Image (cartoon, rainbow, N blue to C red; front, top):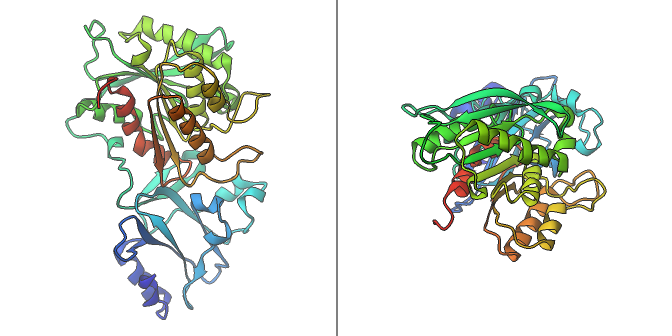
Length: 398
């Protein structure tokens, strides 16, 4: 806030020059505290600007608190927040917004078209159909350095193919990643990683690059990764703890992969994972097919959900009821994922904490990570490398 006090009496041009000198948003310390900072989002409007809203994960929780204030008599608008110094999330500005809270808006996609990235912040993330967003990354936030190709690191290969599924009654696209120097006749078979939302786990979350870097630095052994397409028109059906989908993965995809590649065949050497609904699907698949998968990665898993006709939080209830399975899990969730789900079910954060508590009570090896982030790819891409390291580490190692 100090950075604004001394410029509010200036002209718009002079104030903007002073504010952008060190980059935006402004980040100021809070005394001697290392865990929090004062972050101020700033937008330069014009004479036609009536209002501005900053769109962040916090906007879902407090829409009114995301409306910016005008700085003095200038055309500059601002809003300050106290945030943890490990925060990492995307944001945009909505000038001349309709000011309808998100949970009451009936045409959010049209509204997205009016939102703008921060022109004063070069850190951006392209969300394809949802547009370009700016990134806020505070000093202690998880680094996304693994998402960038490193000089000298060998690259694996990704091949696209089509599988005709008998159980689904349709074709599905899959992509197979083989590591650098893959050897079909290697003495040691390769561990396997299977990820839902296969397209997103290649472009929005560049998993092949992450794997290349992890292998290059010796954090994991070379692995084979399988990216399974989950198109929008069937995603809801497929990933909501759907037994047919799970059979497709466990009884069709994995045997096909084992036949085509030099794969490790033990459940302890196979990982299944995903984000959001894909994290739920991965967990449900492992629960019903622990003889196939021994490791789960769930990034912001939708654990408040349940199969049709079942009460909420099916996965947690199932784990509480059945005998302990030979599973190891890595769960991550954003602390801003507390917005009310559009039903009677608990929030993402609450449901993930419930699942963690059940896993701990039942004695499962589980790594649970809470992040100062929302439900978005910029969080998942920065932490996928950690998750892969955790579940691909041999059992019994520290």
